[in-house]
Image (cartoon, rainbow, N blue to C red; front, top):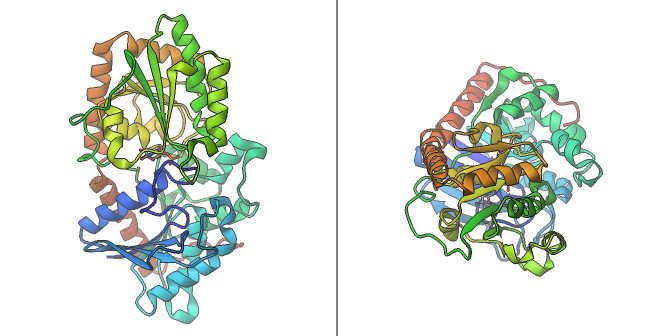
Length: 417
Ligand code: UDP
């Protein structure tokens, strides 16, 4: 199959841990690589966000990344990218010329807008089947972030429009299917394919990063308030009360686009909170960490905490599980699918630092429980979340979209698109 991926803000080649660079980048990179390994030809289109980037980067024999000129050639926050989607679609269509792909897969709603635009140009004489993965939904974001949501207003009608117009939707977890249904999208055209984890890379065997105290708790991710890292800091005083004083909380991620920690307002907010609670000596902020260092850091932890307010999928818990580390997870979104309560980790209610502390206390006092949950996590990651398996499931969604298009099944067009 000839596959085009569109990932407007999340380049598979970007450094991770900045405000807009995380799971989507990993997902697009690893899925594309796994599809290429299965024999498909994959081109990832992303927006040029630096002048020095080459037009095309060959990543593998059947995989390349194309930087499309769309808007200024510098970092632009993802919520300000909508005006450039027309240019992005033009660049993609130009690159296709008269040889369009078999399918185009949009990642995030704005890429969906560009994918539909490029795929349905009657004067070009083709109509390419469009598959859409949202990664995050505006309805969920608004519910949790309210006035703090910086998404453009147009997301309210364009995102459901993308959902209705796409030939097929790939949801990453079961929770997302309910949300999509509530947006008016027919469930018959939704497939579920989760995110995966690189099992050759994230494993329990290998170097272990040094730790400073008896126990280490780890938080990994983009430092944005909805990831709930402050809740983990708030759990530390409760843990102290429970008798766990020699505990280090290592926070990986953050540091703004330049990677400079002091420039990140969220870093300052978290450090101020730690100082206010009298736990600043237990908290280390590491900033953005390269992929190569991540497995050793995961292995050095007694537990990884993922305490987001909401989570469309969450690759970090999978990486922790693959490294044999138990996960304390807020029972929200994709985390309810990946982390099995009392199986591969412990579920806690969202936004509840005391519950996080109780779960951590259970784990820290019981090395046997940690080992059992860790080993079950490894098994679950291996059996369910290899990228090859995810790619095979995604491939089925592509085939369904192609078969539907060949049979002349035309999805209801979103009025606003
Ligand atoms: N990550 C990383 N270095 C960092 C911070 C994060 O490599 O400094 C990676 C992390 O290992 C994971 C991804 O970024 O692969 C975050 O993905 P997740 O789905 O958990 O969160 P999202 O960014 O999608 O909200």
